[in-house]
Image (tube, rainbow, N blue to C red; front, top):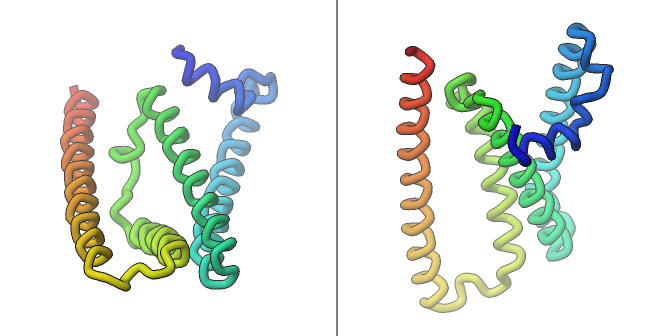
Length: 161
């Protein structure tokens, strides 16, 4: 067990004797998953609404919520990957729910960034920077999708052997 897994096991208190009983562990894991999802949805919706309701302060708070949520998601996925469970091959991400999540996240990030950028479209340099940023960002996302598909195909091939 590496230091990352040990640290997250400590944070989750997974060595507690409570987890010795299989039924208790299963029920608690289900309850934790429900709580985790409720927290994520509340965070996403709050972060999407705050920039429009609370102005600049709300945009900063919303951005902080989204960054924190993103870090927690990356750590959660990293923990499962360290334990040899690939989220992307074990679940169906390409569902309507995944699209709704993406839309709410985009609304949150874009809303916060628009609110924090007062004169975004005032001159040509803003447009040029936006176009360059969109092209670079799209390229990074495209590379990420390509890499994940390749990685998942390798993971599935290893699992089939």
